[in-house]
Length: 442
Image 1 (cartoon, rainbow, N blue to C red):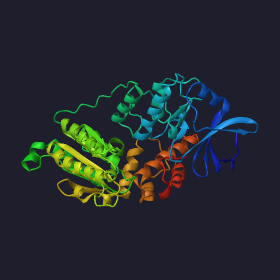
Image 2: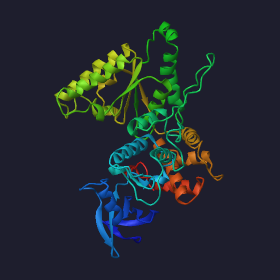
Image 3: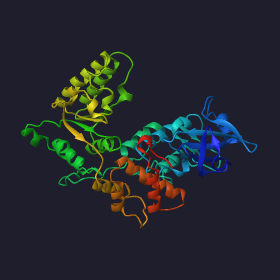
């Protein structure tokens, strides 16, 4: 429809990514995604009430034909539903499920031939072929384009576990057949906790949390009644959240999250009340876990110039609750990217006994992560994971995951059935600069 170099709102076209009879997807030189759609398809979206006035599409004309286009920021995903997303992660899976539910509330039209626009929460059909059921659409998207059903209960992505699938089922209303965990003989010890790419952190969790919970009577004789609170700190993308999610999955205890989205409030006293309610609920379900994410957002130094009376109240409420939680068998795990901004009273021993830095991974840790995330992926014979790990030393675990996912997309776009060394090197070159990080891109 358009040629390389054309401009849209100052964005110059770099490359064609996907094409179909009535729409095309381009990448611009600013790495934004440009979706160009024939006006006839757009008009059907309006008639079917999938789009309303004020939507982000802009009308244009090319060679006498009417189109609409949409520009999506580089950090968001935009792709055909039928292609799915190789190595689909938790955030994208839940976002797609929410978009499917939202659009399904407006129409019964199938979405298997559609376009997923993460930035705006759109799932838009293009009416090109007969579409499968929502069960197959959802399962196939999560499986990276393989025809799967959501119902059958299989884990179709290495980045998704049963807790994510339960949440997706809750969002969409689609039932899912639960997979019964393998039964362990009474005399067979539970498998050790293993965290891919983080051997030392795995060992810390095993020794300071898991062993205490598994052998409470032995540790009580040693004066240890319950695991102490733990603070994980370090730069973004180094695996803090992933590590905590895997620990919660392993322990199988009820967990409750405190973050800016769940407790922040502009009203006086309201945030402190929400903090109190979370801990009260966790204590009622003990033994349980409270995860404090982005703790610098509400536990920063009270002596900072920006502090106010409401902030002082919030920190004071946390101080009370943290000490009370451990006495009532509630494990607290906190995470922050800004250790230096945390209030010193919170960091004191007796509240958070263990401060663990989760920094850039070593070459061996990167190699172990590569082994883990590629175990169910077809790799060409020219890929040497040890050599790749050496090349990626100095990168975050998120960068390593990005490269494998990006290489999968590149190989798929080129019609290949396996990830090749060339696609991985191309993915490495696509790795965003430090100041321009994005979650995924073409």
